[in-house]
Amino acid sequence: FGDRVAAARKDGRALSDGERRALKVLGLGTDVDRTGLRKRYSELVRRFHPDRNGGDRAHEGELQKVIAAYQQLKGAKAFA
Image (cartoon, rainbow, N blue to C red; front, side):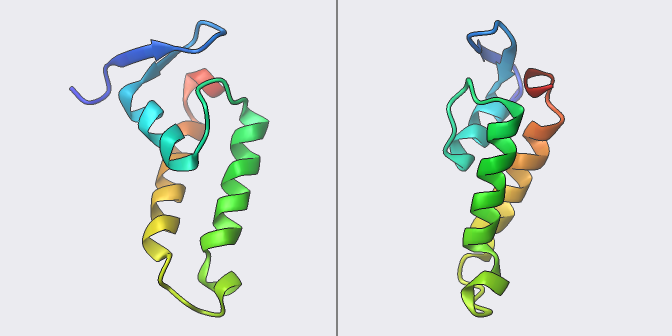
């Protein structure tokens, strides 16, 4: 139900609702490429990781969302 195809990218590749939500978590548009996806993921991991924040775990929930979103998108056909 939650993963029905919602829209297509400019290149015609379809995105599911889950993929669109994951892009939103990462703050990316639908036409990002694999390189842009990896770059944004790296930026956000550095921003939210406790080791980069003096051990402060206040952003741990955000980090987990970023990781889950990237895991969903990195294997998606739309980003192959």
